[in-house]
Image 1 (cartoon, rainbow, N blue to C red):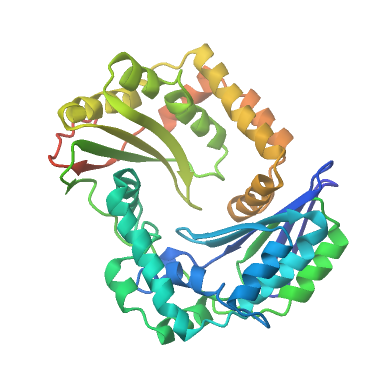
Image 2: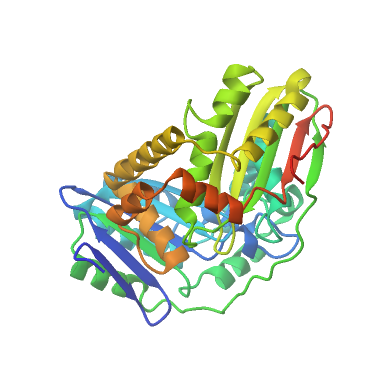
Length: 414
C-alpha cells in the first residue's frame, strides 16, 4: 500500500487497516465485528440488537457510569449499531486520545460485565426502537423490503422481532456473546492523525491475544415474496422497490453508482424531476445503492397520498425502465460532480474515512484511495453506463407497499 495506508492481519484473524491523513488532528475508528443480525439464532432475531447496548453497561474494571464518563473525558464521539452481517462500533476523538479510547473499547468488546440487572432496561429500549417503526412508516417499509429482497438470513430485521426481544434471557444473551465475540473476521479501520507503529503495537496488545473463535458460516436460504402489501391505516402510502445490481467489489461498481445517481442524484435527477416536480405525485422519492459481500442492490422509495399511489408506482417503475434506453451527457456530468463531491467531503473527515477503509477491506481486501475513486468516476460516460445497464438491467424486482390499499404491479419490460 502507499505511504499513507497500512494494514496488518494478526495471527488470530483480527485485521487492522489504517490511513494516515495529513493535516488533521482527529482520529477515528470503525470496528466491524462479524456478529450482525444474520448471525442471530433462528427465531431469536434481536439478540445482537440487545447486546450492542448491554456491553456498554460495565466493562473491565469500569462500571456502567465509568465507561461513559471515561469516554466523555477523552472527548469521544461514538456510535454503534447492528447491520446485516456486522455489528459496528464507531468512535472519533483527538489523535492523542486514540489509543486510550481503544483501550476502553477493548474492554467493552472483550470483557463486558453483561449485568443481569440491566437486561430489562436494555429490553425496554430495544422494544421502544421496534415500536418506533410503527410511527415511522418510511423506516418500516425499508425493513419490510429488505426482509423480502435479500435471501435469508441477510434480510433479517436488524432491530429484531418482538417475540425474541420480549423473551430473551440473561443466560441466552451471555451465551450468544460468548459465541459471537471472536477475533477471526473482525476488521478495525482507523483514519486520521495516527502513528502507525504505535497504533499497530497497541492493537496487538489489546486484541492480539483475543481467541479467534469458531468459524461460523452463513448459509443462504429462500427469499421472501417478490411483491407484497402491508395493511396500514393511513392517509399516505409508502412504496419500496428493490432490484439486484453488481456488488461493491465488482469492476462495474462505479457504472452502477453512476446509473443510480442519474436516477436519484439531487433535484435534477430523473426520479425527482419526473415523479415529484413535473407531476407532483409524491413528497419524497429517491433511489440508493446498497451492497452485501456478494450482491448489490438498488433500493427505491416513494411516499405519496393514497389517491396518487398507483400513478406514483407506475411512473417510478417507468423511469427505472427508461434509464436503460437513454443516458445523456449532461446527466453523467452531474452524476460525476455529485459523486466526486461526496468523495472529497469523505476525504476531509477522519470518521468517514475510518468507515470507508474498514468497508473496503471487507469487500475488496484492500483500500481504494481517493485518487483511484476519482479516476473511476472521471471515466464514466453515457456509453459506459448504458453498456453496464445492458449487461445488468433492472429486473427481478421486489416491490412492497404499505398503506390502506394494495396496488397493481405493472412492470415495464418484464
